[in-house]
Length: 85
Image (cartoon, rainbow, N blue to C red; front, side):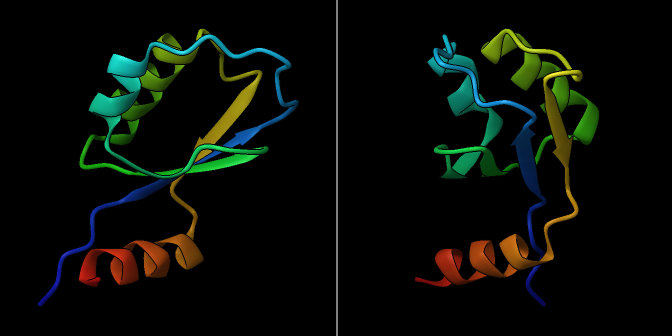
């Protein structure tokens, strides 16, 4: 049985013109499947609370500016396919 690591979907309410990111913290979050555009995706073994807190800290954003969820069924399949390559 294959256990899937959660994939977090990060939706920017408005894409910032400039985003100063702490790359070290971002890399600690997990494997990034997408980091462009309005919707990002990251496969991570961190708990939802830990993932959100670390993301907000590394990006200097708040929950009012970004919505983070694990409701990404399509991205789970993407992560599974990527892992089997």
